[in-house]
Length: 134
Image (cartoon, rainbow, N blue to C red; front, side, top):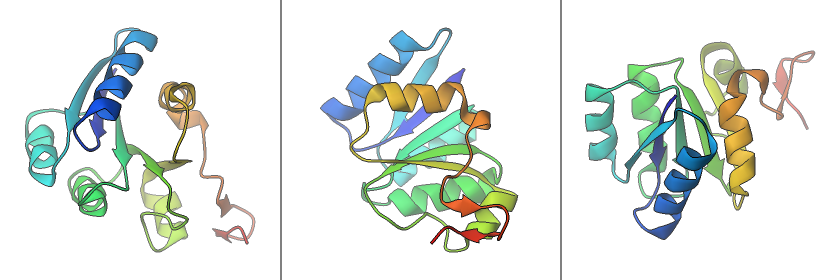
């Protein structure tokens, strides 16, 4: 499994990288901290899952760039914001593979989400009403 983590450079980024590589078998993790690094990463490789800390500078632009290149790219957004990365929930559910975890979140939750990404659904979306849950 190949993972890209987008976060501010520093201790948290390196800790997440090491813990994910140590926990998930046959997993390699690359990191990026800027929009330019994300651009380069996607030019040279493909990823099973991208983890984005949405609170970083240019976090939204990173998500937008990824979705322009690979619309169905599995993306795990770690955020302390209430709002989703896309303004229309229905568009996200139909056209993209985005999941969210609120910050701070234990690494075990990130690992569980990455390993079972396709089994999780957005818990903010109501399939019956085709709307965001109120």
